[in-house]
Image (cartoon, rainbow, N blue to C red; front, top):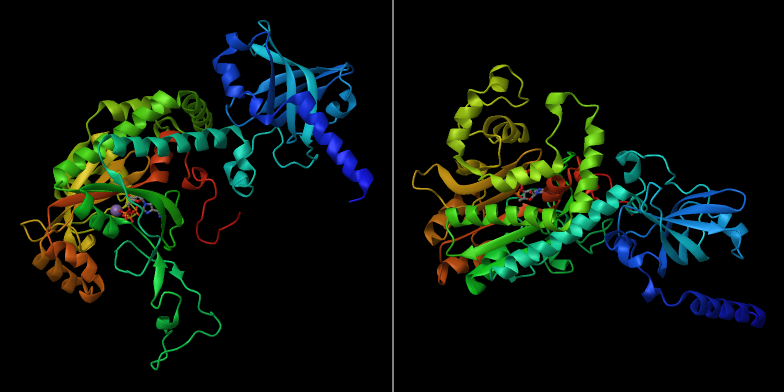
Length: 503
Ligand code: ATP
Ligand code: MN
């Protein structure tokens, strides 16, 4: 850099710090809205992004959002400001730092505005900024996920996401559960929860081969074939057999080609596992947990929930009356005030077999008898049409559930429990685990899982085995329910789905 340039850069920085003060002294726009009486008449500084800029001859309005609240701050600027011409030209999307006085505007739509004493353009924007004033579809916004968090809806969703993540930890900590970090890279491939992503450093064009012509994973990074985890449960069980009550909360990966509004290839799962818990304890824990999180959202995110509710109501105007869902906050309260219906799989099959949609051929997958796996359409029928509240289904046929589930005395069913929610279908899947060594090994042999590969897991049944239970809650499925968003891609900042790993 030439000396003259260096001097200019230096004096710019000095000018900013003298005139605006440190970034630390910025006031959150949310604070202004919460405590307006405190701020009227005060001079403060805000930093944010421009949502709109309207100017007339000798004054103009900037609308500023700083990510803390969906209501923006309106800023009035006049031609007395030395850079008035520059301010008039600020494009939507620019980053600005503004010092000014908050004044009450009782006659206007918003209760107060800021009269700018100084406007600094931190980072300009251009006229082709993709988020202009008009409403954009969620499909379009997904193509610009790097910018969509600058919209009100996504800010509300991600703030709710953050607060519920916090509440998950407080729920378990208050109950003495230990937060255990289970590995994301795993060498066990029999967790029974679907296809896995391979983790390898072998050269895909020229992998080492065994004498049989297979890829020789003994030469791979870990000396064996490894994958990304589909569940932390198996390691979670090991933790529960040492610490008593544990939970995991982390990323989970499934390489299944499910292009639905409820499946992601990378999602976050919460998995508690507790020693000396039977299936009833497990169901109580799941119900308490879901209600705690929903209550937490109602107590701590009401502004955002109201905003999301209004968004949903707007969207649903075009739907037929019978297809509209319950208003968001009413729906959340409804779940809080009703106990979940506990029903066996066998009872559910009877209900479904005799249901109108089944008889009229309205189900895509007809229910013709005991043993079939339930599809989301069946789960939602039970919840939305039949019981009209959340349902916990237990006692599934062992053939459609994982090998580790506790075998019931009938020899046909296992102590599984799925929690079904309106709009979502399955939100939690869990079970009491088979703690008996011989029964567990017998089941592994039946389904063809080698004892050798699972010897570490079987050790827990050899050394001090105990009744224990656990479940997995899909974090994004819960967020779909709490935010009223319709597509799971819109409740995680950067969704990964088949053929999509942008950003
Ligand atoms: P589904 O039948 O809905 O595909 P699953 O039976 O495969 O789910 P589990 O293995 O029981 O799911 O996982 C526990 C929980 O994790 C589920 O109840 C769900 O909330 C969540 N979950 C499972 N798969 C996904 C996915 N692909 N994307 C987001 N959440 C998921
Ligand atoms: Mn399941």
